Length: 121
Image (tube, rainbow, N blue to C red; front, side, top):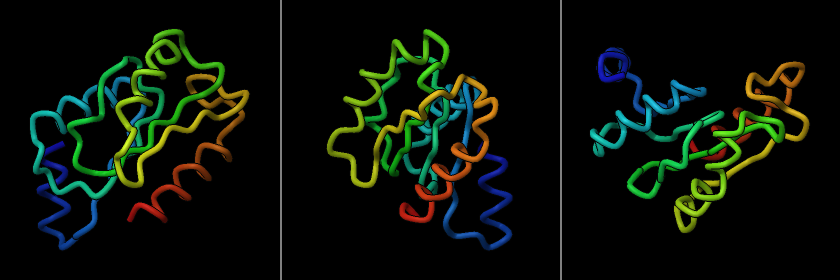
């Protein structure tokens, strides 16, 4: 992720957002936890399979998952939501009828991400 950030910054991009899914969200959480000053303007974590806290994240976060997601995603949802309390422009969204891969729910997935990033950036 650091290489990607450096590459995009060198190209002149000022507002960077990360959109990650599942294990990618866990990896992004690890990166952002150890790079608190990374120039990331917003993060969309889709299907985060843990109860990791977003409290230390400086940027706004959208925690999104499907109502029929994997058990580890659903089990950690309450804790993740708690860690978003008080974080400006951060929230949790549950997509009705969506599974972990958003099969047949592509439209809802893209709409939620786009709406969020349009407001957060």
